[in-house]
Length: 153
Image (cartoon, rainbow, N blue to C red; front, side, top):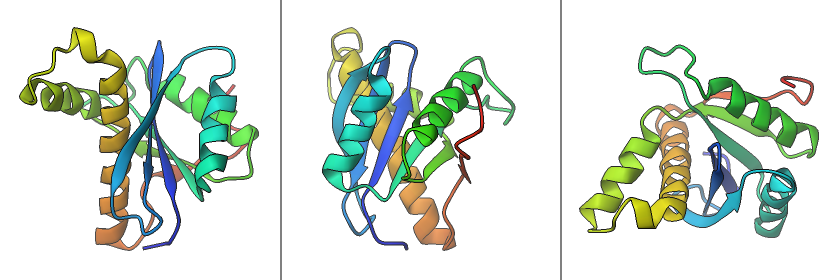
């Protein structure tokens, strides 16, 4: 397992959930919910700098079949914008069902989905990042793919 804090990002149309890991890459925890729009990339990068992140992990919402979903290109474009704005590596990882899992987790704790939307985004980011950490620990190689700064829009 490579050492260092990672930042996890769940990109949505309205909000972006953010999570981070401990320096040993063992545990992901929620950080913030960022409004989507002007200044969103700057806010993500500020969170990464504040935590000394060595990598930013962005969830890639694939369809259950493994193909692109309606949100796949949006996540790729967002990850590309982040990659162009920082020297910190940005990695896209499969996030199938992370939001569904986050909604289930919130319901299991008795919280209403409607009242917990911003928290759900953070929980989804935690799920994405924890999955990436677990996959790297189990397989010995970083999950997903690194985003080249010149990819996307």
